[in-house]
Image (cartoon, rainbow, N blue to C red; front, side, top):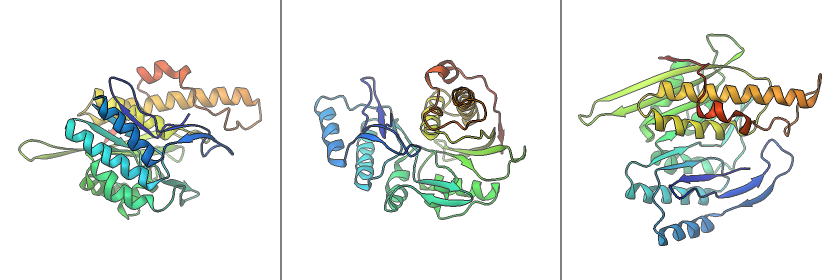
Length: 288
């Protein structure tokens, strides 16, 4: 199932898409709300006085008017609860064989840059998306840090580049993620914590890893709001547990010598419940 907008509340959540399938499949079916329908649902929440949220999480969407409506709702929710945390996964594209490719309409980019990112508290772009948002290419870790600083200056307190094509110190078999948390104290002092994480690459294409990463980062930053290192270690370690279990099961289903298909590579979320709730830390972060 695919969910585009999930604002958490004691009463539950509001899903704006109910679809089966994804970019990893040849076909998908289901329903996706448009901006007017989203507005109508939100108005219903207001009329019943149940629009009191602590967290909002958004991911993949293809419609700029819908995205703009999300911003309006988040701004209104923040007026009611100044402690609300908005986590945005700015899903726009990725790199294949070194080339960037957008898989959403290009007119979403200025909406993300000018409206969404400025109201977000946490963003989780991949390297290509971070480059799109800032107009800066990343070739080195130093440039990645500069890009994260640019994203901080746009609004978010926490920036995590979930994947990159940077050379990992541990070798080509590892994937680098970078994180930065900027906190300004009441006296105006700014403290920034930056980390690097290296995860073993898994030879498969999974669907839903970005959604899982953003959701778990939200959960672990809630538990550890001022310790990005620990929050990311738990997030990435849980990811590794899920991916390793998934690829092991997928290979068993596909049979020896056969490549698993998209259906067989569905993330083993239920089977990984304990690892998601209390992951053994198998990936350590390096403080930069």
